[in-house]
Length: 223
Image (cartoon, rainbow, N blue to C red; front, top):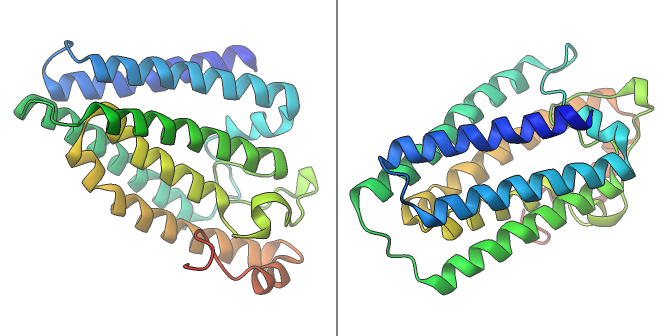
């Protein structure tokens, strides 16, 4: 499983780098190289931590499809993948067409948000051993409702944490165009939350009661 973790991270970061540099038309892009190195280091560190603390969840996280996954979620993941690739292409095109204008302090803020996103998602993983990448009820793992930690405040804390990544990444790389696309990802996760809740409402005992007690989906006091 560790070998698979390393290979998946290498492939994922390699694809991101390929899209970024091909779109930018240059390898002379210090911010992008730094982002890729950070992504590889953080991805491996978080994965190894999960292998130590919750190997069952790590195994689930490395399965990117499941037969019981709703068709709506399969379509969502396909569209989301396309949107993410377009996002990186847009970031690369901005580097090709204009000189970087992002102030260094904002790039530092981007790094902080990126790391904060990772730490927040790790907190989610610590509380919820059923945080699979695809929507499904994990009956074979005795899936049950989790209402502790961040789940005491919002029903989909992982999406809230990942949003920090989609804000921090363009800041870290120095892309105003990438930052402008952030609302697209918020809408995408809002849609994903509805797909997930339909599945959990019908298949996970106690989830309807939990949804009534925790009113907010991603932003406490707002939505």
